[in-house]
Length: 267
Ligand SMILES: [Zn+2]
Ligand SMILES: [Zn+2]
Image (tube, rainbow, N blue to C red; front, side, top):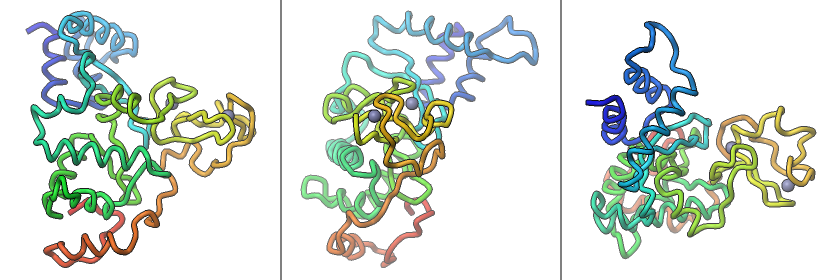
């Protein structure tokens, strides 16, 4: 097997790799790399370019981008020809597809670009889907493992790096989203400039880039500085979930558990 094939297979199997893992893979592909020496960013870039040249006829490429809550770079194989979510029908059921779309929409369109686990489970109760609480929880836990979605430190659910990479064109086509002012990569969760609508990833908004709390684009003051360079979550509250919808979930919860630990994974 060639080094490039090894890398492609690793990505296909693991689906979304952290930069460290990807670096290890590239290291294994560099047969002439002296023992103990580091794989440079240049080597990684060259390997990605080489593999992408080979993959181009198949409309697949390796794409890289950050997880929006901590800025860690990930790599995934993406389909460049067809970015519609319906292509996922080969691995997801029709109901799963609808659920994914509805959850993605709720997250991207929410004020905090994240939703509570209660809201998440209520979306699963939609007439088109009708998932039980445990079915919705199991599916969401699987999707979080696969990095389609991510659980934030406050227990809310945000978009995952795999959705950002693989659904990039779909998200751009369907929602009013922008690229990060600094890194030029799609930014769903980040710092907003209320004056010029610029967007910045939280991990991109450090003091080297932002001076005197002013937007680097329009030079007006940022309203929200709380999360600058913190890499932590936005101001997520439960207030978007009304008490009726909360009851709906509890009603069908076989464990009868009322409310969830904000810090624990969906159980
Ligand atoms: Zn950025
Ligand atoms: Zn601005």
